[in-house]
Image (cartoon, rainbow, N blue to C red):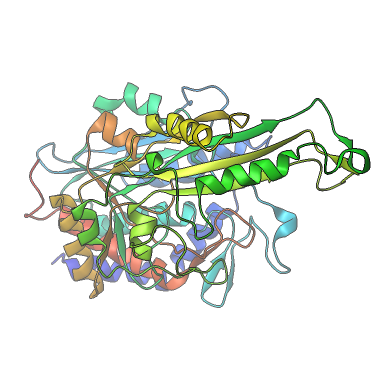
Amino acid sequence: MPSREGALARAAAFFDGGGFKALLSDLVAIPSTAQEEGREADLDRYLNGAIRPWLERLGFAVQVRPNPVAGFGPILTGIRIEDPARPTVLLYGHGDTVRGLEDQWRQGLEPWRLIEEDGRWYGRGTADNKGQHALDIAALEAVLAERGGRLGFNVKVVLEMAEERGSRGLREFVAAHARELAADVLIASDGPRVEPDIPTIATGTRGTWHFDLVLRLRPGGVHSGHWGGLTRDPAILLAHALTTLMDSNGRVLVRGILPPALPNSVRAVLDGCPVGGGGDAATIDEGWGEPGLTSAEKIYGWNSLIVLAMISGRPENPVNAVAPDARAHCQIRYTVDSDPAAFGPAIRAHLDAHGFHDVAVENAGLRMPASRTDPDHPWVRWAQASMAKSLGKRVQIIPNASGGLPGDVFVDHLGVPLVWVPHSYNGCKQHGPDEHFLIAPAREGILAFAGMWWDLGEAGTPKP
């Protein structure tokens, strides 16, 4: 008789027998970067050549349509309806990647070839996001096989090819096809776990708001010998302006760009939540950031201010001159508890109050909106229980993934709760050279999804 245990065993056999590695190897070999010119055919090949035939074999009606925003990658939809009375799940992923950066990978590795080494699969897209959505679909195939070609629920897939360019066009696409894509819940995978060995559910993501601080003092540079010590240095002045925004311990001083408080529901779900698993990528510096918050509260429940880039003069070829101007590109990562419309006025008022009237705030605006489903939502708790049953271990819920995802699009236009189940970890180097996927969490990922897909076909799913 078909059984939950049988479905998990099928998924494990596919993974342990090398089937998933071979599948991921084929996907990685398609150089589907959205950030390099001349790769448009590869974006299409990923969808039409790799994903479309796979989904059609699983009984999906598949369409690949152009992006409604010209110049951005196509979008695939796959729909498999068994019984409209049963739950419908939306599965999202993206097949585009960042640049390959071929010349920056360490010796023996390369972006478009899967290489296994020390419990890791190296290759561009292994973690972000080819390996993650491929695990979810492979688990779906295991359940289909165990139930003899049935699922017991309905699935809709959205796979875009412009996520690494800000998901341009996705909002317009989902809005135009909202009726077609209607679902009860989004269950999908992207981003990192809180730690490599802790299964995680994220119910949203922080948004991103960018701005430039610019100080222009003169049309061109002036001789440093003649003018140094007499005329204002824009780099020094801009540095002082930045120190009014944040102190030397990382505490944000512009309180108007922060949430009014940490919500009790967020504090409760993050109680005891670990943060780490970055490998050699970075360290957690104790005492950095908002006082009184734990590391988990800082990154999953609060706002942060980051200077992404600064320049004055030409660092690569300096000359003996006092520079004419200075610029800093900054980012705010914010939760849904903040209003990004207030960020610009708050920064302007803060700079003026500290005497920096000459420092302009330019190019300010929203890059990716924040989103969040209540961590106690029935679908979130259902997924947590299903995963715990499959993996035999605690599943951590966090209110926001640490990176950015287009969850707001699906909340705004489909009204679905968000259940993000990441399979990667903070140290995967997903946007740099040597990107990799940890094999052990990946194996847990396919088992977790096989269990959820099985449970969706049983009684006891949350009611609409």
